[in-house]
Length: 421
Image 1 (tube, one colour):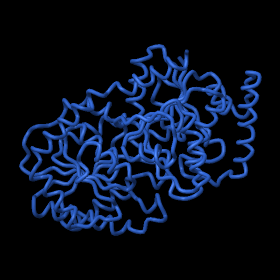
Image 2 (cartoon, one colour):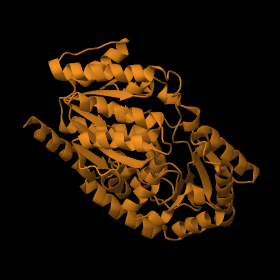
Image 3 (tube, rainbow, N blue to C red):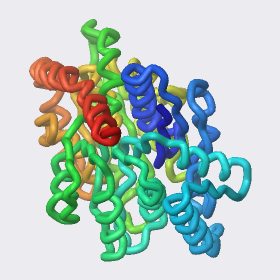
Image 4 (cartoon, rainbow, N blue to C red):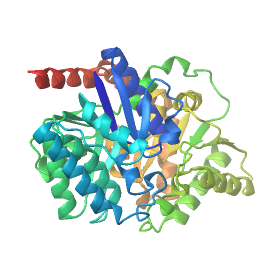
């Protein structure tokens, strides 16, 4: 079986890396003879995956999506769309495979033509806060071209919505309606697909695939008591990612004040982690982590900065030795929870609190727009005081996740059986 995985971003984000590891492991277990091609925005970052073929995504034909440079070749977009439409029409009418362009472009076209199944990788690709979002449009078109070729399309566990703009919503409705199955990772995403977009495609609520990677590593969890609370922290530069977010300075100052209080009043040991290393500057956590660590040192706090992780499993192992994690990236929460560690999550998109809600831990998720020292400090103290009870709750939730670990593969097999009939 030949599988094409699209809408893959970058392995420099260790959340994406974890999803890919779990996806490949599951596919190779369920389909031992599977041949996998990955179309990625940052193909160089995936080269260490030697068992798959990695090429640039459709979006790389018209822009540099790995670095957020969407206006680089804007005039190519309508030409590329016309060529893709012509290729799809020709294939449907005569089964003629029209290929063109560079060697990488020709390889991607061949992968689309050859695919027995096209998967939209798990993650959060389908949202837009503006009426025109090139990233969303090309994520949708990456699936739309497969649909135009009449290939079976399945969306692995996704965060979907919000999507601004009537044109973008119409495009999303058409693409999602053509998929054989949509897997979502939060109830909010399911409601958006069913109620807002009114899509009739079957929708299944399943855990983020990164849980599948991390849950298997729980044996490394440290149970040795520590004389002082060990608190891990991740932070992002949301202001660089979203020009409409004006609270970056307040967010960073709040984290510094919170961590200083925890260090001074609870003798906590602070460990700042970097979970994403690019590929674009706004997606690199190292500058903001460095700013936080320097501000804490100036405040007299003993802080450790860890910016040396290159693989998701290393980060999961590091989180497993903590007493609590205060994170802003959603996969910070997933990695820590999968290691049995309580989490206080700051959500910069709805997916973060959506994930916590599915585990019954929504009390410990705050929107980045609403953060303040008092709120976060009270919640952090509550977590520290109830750490043993929370670990027990988390273990129960993880047992449920483990029991559902193969559901996404079962869903894929059902789709393939239906497609062959």
